[in-house]
Length: 374
Ligand code: UDP
Ligand code: MN
Image (tube, rainbow, N blue to C red; front, side, top):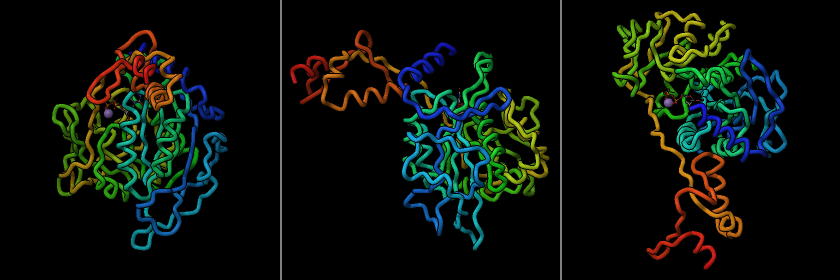
């Protein structure tokens, strides 16, 4: 596991050397947080927005550290005009959707699916926090293309946790998002932790948007019951149904609750500890949640709007392609293989790996032979 991570980091360090800035590094306890890129401008063409298209985020108390390489003509980081998207004449609350993610071969695929779900949601600010010590330009480009207002942070898991028996997955990055929210003194809107591999029904967003303190709802495909849900009686949460109680006061999944930021701001010591399995419970305790205050959603927890899907892991293949074929080639192959290599989807080598073949007219030839005879 450690070796594998080290290898991934090595690959990133090797191939993504022209990364974006690393100028800003804020140290929060033992964690580091780097702002890679921010774009508050909503450029989605088909989401119904009335009036302005900027998300109402207070101006940064930190200097924005977007590098010139990462700044595009569409970046309007100084614009903080309030959004006029309205609901019965009132501005609708922004959903701060926090996604921890990490470099691995499925990363782009997961974020493509998630990003295209989020493209349907108005007044959403996507905080993507990468468990990596570099700012990945390819990742930023992917996020930027969705047109969703977003910020890309990088916040690697401190190495001491990486070597634990059960590692606290996605914690350093969620903490970075929480720190960013605190730094910016954001007290309006709703916070939601949405992992990159989960599946979100669009109805979830209208359910959580008007959370007063903390709302809760069922999460499908969790544990031995395949569900983790509050138990609701007469419109009130009275207990929890979760196959791994583990003495937790709030035995819920990370995807099973949303928090009002105004409520959260009342607890300056709110935190998510590096304690695998207990992150949700500890976080909800740190905001002094009482069971009778929980707002049940999804038709009193009778419907499932979020699923804890997981992607099967398979090893990235090594493909044997000689360097001269790639460098001498006028085809797409070099750019394509380089992209896949940089993102950890597959790798190539001139000396070992699965043989590269080319198919044409139903016939297969070795890529090397084809490239030279072509
Ligand atoms: N994650 C991370 N670093 C890691 C492993 C996971 O940032 O080393 C992220 C991952 O992208 C996901 C969340 O943390 O958004 C939960 O991880 P995962 O889905 O692997 O765990 P699950 O809860 O599904 O078992
Ligand atoms: Mn997951």
